[in-house]
Image (cartoon, rainbow, N blue to C red; front, side, top):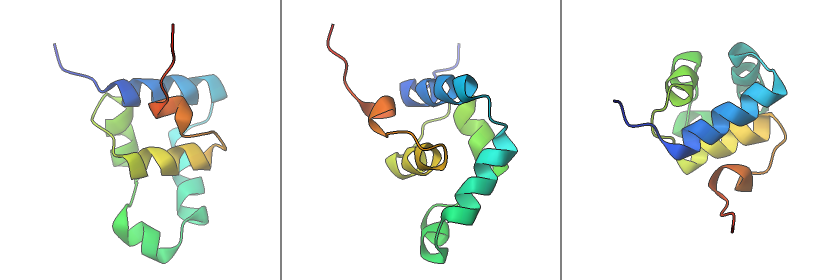
Length: 82
């Protein structure tokens, strides 16, 4: 069984609830990012699909994805107490 990142699972659940297509998310990231940010962290369709399949996600990648859908990053990396 392949290891899946908990952060990538949370991102997938949030995106599924929003009902957005991967292409729309990548388009939002490209349109709203500065040139400098795109040189540091470029999320293309292939990378987004890897993340949604369970690949490890960096904080910057998660931040860009969550900003593209107007969500708080704490929903991905936040700690919930039971």
